Length: 290
Image (cartoon, rainbow, N blue to C red; front, top):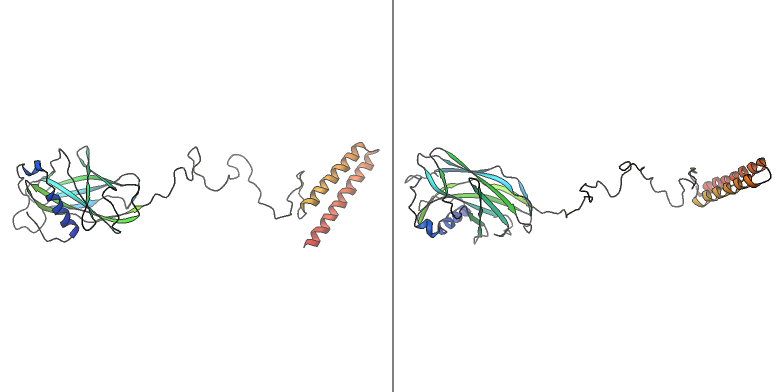
């Protein structure tokens, strides 16, 4: 096995796991020519993760990112299997929670994760009928990857990176190592339907706003015992509600007298006298309260 100095424990574990998990069919297949020259201490494949979102919502949609495999040699690198390692800060991420898929042409193939003794998650890009990626000399193959997190994943910070393995029969070479891709896991705190009306529109406050449906904006609540207007709609600033109501009732009685009494002048005089008496009482009461 062609190995180099392990600069990352996670990637060393990933590389070992990928080689241990070689399928029986792959073990008996003809070994691919090594794309790593003997004695070469540099990786033949330059590997880079790019394009991923900065955070994923637990239970949310897939986020897409890309893995570039660039062959820096004059030899073809065939049977290439990247190994994705997820290391979460709190060590609470479970193998069942990440859903990772990689694309082989138009096919999206799932990656199965396993947990290591260090509570890191390791998943090999492998599937039935997939023979690995082939990277011609001096060329770059870009692998499309998409990731989502199950709804029970807790808020956390995660680092993703990749060790790249070239399988060669029962053996293999570690031929690439990626940069770190860091992202957060956010909790979905909004309950279904919260903040939306039945028609799907979002509410902007706790009640209806004036003018939205053609109705006038409601007046602010008046202080206790203070009337903003009389029942007839005539404003009586600063008067108490009982006094205002009494004034209206007195006015109504006066108007009835005017309609049924012996003379219009006498009725009008009675109405004006009643209103003045009640209004004067209201003003006097208002001054006392001050």
